[in-house]
Amino acid sequence: MATRQATEFGGFPRALFTFLAGLEKDNSKSYWDANKATWEAEVRDPVQALMADLEPDFGPLRTFRPNRDVRFSKDKSPYKTWVGVTTSERAVGGIGYFLRIESGAIRLACGSMVMATDQLERFRAAIDNAASGADFDKLSKQLAGKGLTVGPGREDPFKRTPAGYPKDHPREEILRWKGAVVVKEYEQAVWMHKAGAADKVREVWSGAAPLTNWITEHVGESTTPVRRPRG
Image (tube, rainbow, N blue to C red; front, side, top):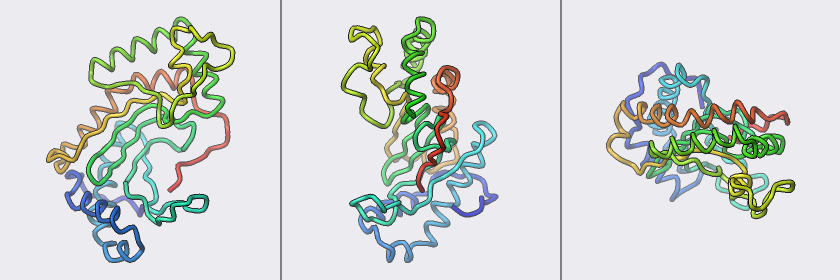
């Protein structure tokens, strides 16, 4: 997106969701060009204002380019039908906070969506360890009490127990995860169109911080070359 606008966040405009719904129906350059002014004023600028509101608490945020990378995809639709914000610099191996806005919902997430190979090794070792594994169980229960469920990330877990770990391991299911993340989704509602929507994002992200902190402490960033989320 373009240079950050110095405006206050007033909520996600209704026109933002309408624009995305229209893009789902007509994912074409002609639609985009005809509605570019709407995208700039009702999508880009409010999202940038939200980012500026959240950055003092969560650090630098980045957003995704609206254009899809279609080079290796059978789907040649030119534009994403969603808007995303994240603190992570990596598509694989990133640790942080995520926001995705779709035509009828917003999705908030915290943790690591997909771990890199070196991270998976450290994650499994930490889950296997008596102390750090127990801490993971404890924080999962604590977050569940807040209505925040810790799950396996963006991809389905491995079907088999990782080599070197017993099939009857007390955390065998978690050992098969490819990531560890809290995801909270909300259908479009009136509160999203008000300035308090930033507080809802802040509430979920802050509430799930124990998971992000655990991953940072016991897994850490990947040492493989950075793969930034495609735009």
